[in-house]
Length: 263
Image 1 (cartoon, helix red, strand yellow):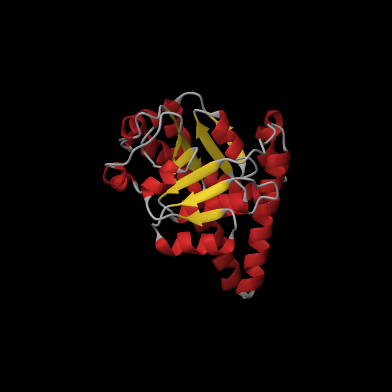
Image 2 (image 1 turned 90 degrees about the vertical axis):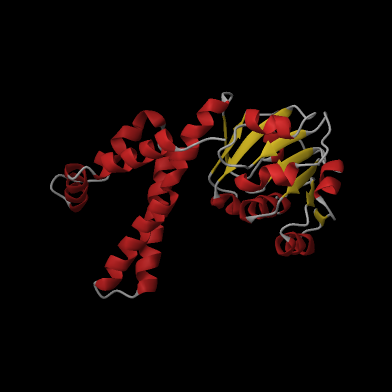
C-alpha cells in the first residue's frame, strides 16, 4: 500500500512506553508529514518527544488533543480507561485507534461515542526500530496509512481473532530468556560475555532473516535443513522433542488463550 502523504493530525491520549515508541518511529520516518499531538501525561515522555521532533506537540489536556486530532490513539492502561475517558467529548468524524489490551473495538466504541470508527492496534516493542508485526483490526484505511513503515502490518477483519495474535505475542519474554540462557552458558565455558552476547544475538538475527526470506510452502523444511544426521543440531532438537519442550511451549500459550479475560 502506498502511504498517503497528506498531513493527518494524530493525537495520543496517554504517552506510555508503547505510545512513545510509536510516536518516535512515526516522527523519524523520512516521508513523515503527520502532526503528532501529545497529551500531558506522562509529562516526561511528552516533553521529551516535543523537544526532539518538530512534528510532536504537547498540549495542555486530553480534550485539547481530541479537539485537534483526526485520529485519536488511546494509550492509557486498561484499568484506567473508564476514568481517563469520562467527561471527554469525541466527534463523529474521528477515527479511534486503541492500544488498550484486552478490550476489542466493540468494547471501546461506547466510550468514544459519537465516534463510530474504532480499531485496535497491537504494536510490539520492536516498533521503536520500525520492525516487527503491527496488528490493525479492523483495517481502517486512515490508520493503515498512518502506520505505514512502522513494521509488518497485519490486518484482521474479525475482532474476535485479535485474541489469538495477542496470546501468540506472549512468547517475547521467553525468547529473551532463551537468548540470555545461551549467552550465560557460553560465558560459563570461559568466553567473555561480550563475545558470547554478540555471537548469540548475531546467530538469532541470522536465523530470523532466513526464516523471513523462506516461503511459507518451505517453512516446514527449515528444521531439517539446519541439522545434519547425528550432528549437534539434531541432537539438541531431538532432546527437546523427547522431553516435550515444544508441546509445553504451545501448551503455555494455549493456556493463556483459554484463560485470559477480555473486558
